[in-house]
Image (tube, rainbow, N blue to C red; front, top):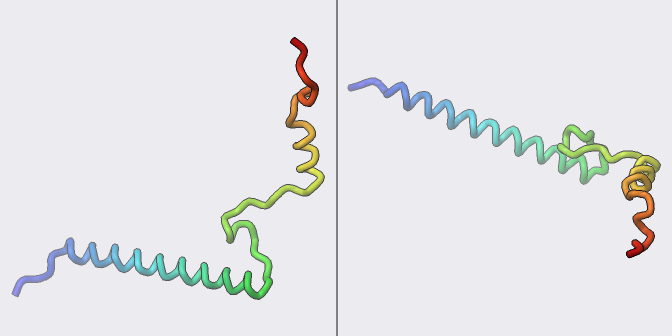
Amino acid sequence: MAGRNPQTHAKRQRELAVKERRERKLAKRAEAAARRAAGGDTAAGETGGEESPPADARDETAATSAPEGADEPRSR
């Protein structure tokens, strides 16, 4: 009886690694969902999103983003 092909072992290891990664990811998502359902706070790094700037910073960027005189009609 011949031994198993080494490629088969490598393939099995890759498959197990992928399965474990998926399980960890699923568990992490379930934990985050449970925290959200409980009303807990999540950090920006956990959700992958960026933290929004404070309200006063948003107002300043909105005021400076339009060029001067943009709201006035152009003369021909």
